[in-house]
Length: 607
Image (cartoon, rainbow, N blue to C red; front, side, top):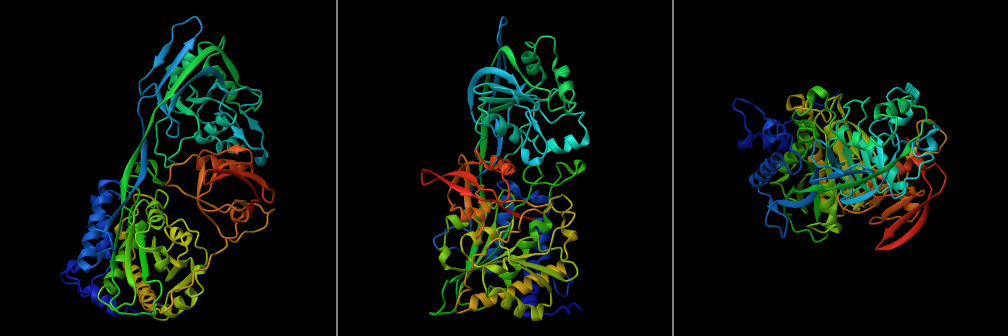
């Protein structure tokens, strides 16, 4: 049975706040006004770097000022800026078709040619090879399909079709669909020595003859080769050199899905491909303030407790990982639960503790660019404005507004042996049905602090059908439960502020299971760094006890090759994992402090 609502000091204090009082209301929710503001259409989804994010940051700064919080020591402002890649645009790509016996034709308009978002910048020339759909399905999938079989593409320009065979049976389509991503096609071409990749949308495909629109790409590095798309006019100019075969006839042969239909060299044609990608750099802002310790406590170690939540979201869904339907495309993703709820909980906790005595400093943090890869919190812990070694604990709140059946999940409890007992004690009054999860390797900002060696907790009420959709709106929040969660976390934070000895950090080893069971996938134990521009896969950390740590890899290493596949970015690494087998060692080539090294990594399996 859920406990009755209690008018504690927490509730009374926040109810009395003039800033959020409602006329005629006996007790005002300490979180509702915040959620309604942050999830309002005025903020347009709070996309990192956008005007909406800046308005949200302004609101948070004013709230911190109203409560009496100060900027961190040595900081003139509550806003802590960081740079990140916010998108890509074509800055003037071209293709020149030089056919024997005919004048050269250069295509320059955006309708004719456009760089792919992950292209390297540069200009290359070479003979042309048509490689069908450019598909390569690894042997590990128990399905044989290799568009490059019998083709020599070294130092040549490869032309491929977009998508995958249109008329293939369902089994074939299912097998090749995973490998039709254009990044995978780019990797396959580069791996075989191609100078450039040109993608055309065939006349039998959806969007026939159109270029591939340049989409947002969170990877800062290119794919290791020049890559563009070309429209039907450019394709026609290229295939004019193919005797007795139109592009439509060629595509029809390939569309059967027969893996033995081969590509061919386009003799007598030289392509000059120039790609010019301008990657837009923007500035995001973490918002951080603090309440100084108010009591002299000489025996207290690690003088900081940090509570935090990300306040950014997906804007109108053009970037990040929107799950909007076609009918919802372009609509504001309000992000009431993700994560106006967590942000509001942190504000409520800060308000409740702002006037209470404390032995430690309380830092109140709001992260941006979480949706783009934990960029804001990662920047904070890698360039800390206060010493990481002085942080006693970090509490994270991400999606805490849709509790049902009195359930509350608390993650990362394995990061300190102190957590289970403290949670149990605080829950005597709160009365939640707690679900404790030891794993700190979560897709939220708690992961950044775990990697920095800070004992952490993450509060979460679960996913729902409105996740990453425009329908995640303020009226769907369960405010009574959100307020209870904030009250529960206030009790825990108060205990942390007054502890004589800080929680001992424990490195959690990722649990893995043996191979041989259906549904298993490769587990390497690597944690990518999404925020730094580098050729290869930069490791932001490794999972304790995982294969990467056992292989001697560590934070800061840059993987440039695995299982014989060169790695230019995180996408290449993801695709290369298809070549690995559970329990079989694979050679990894990596850079450490400018030195090229090798090791053997043995993948494990996990659900």
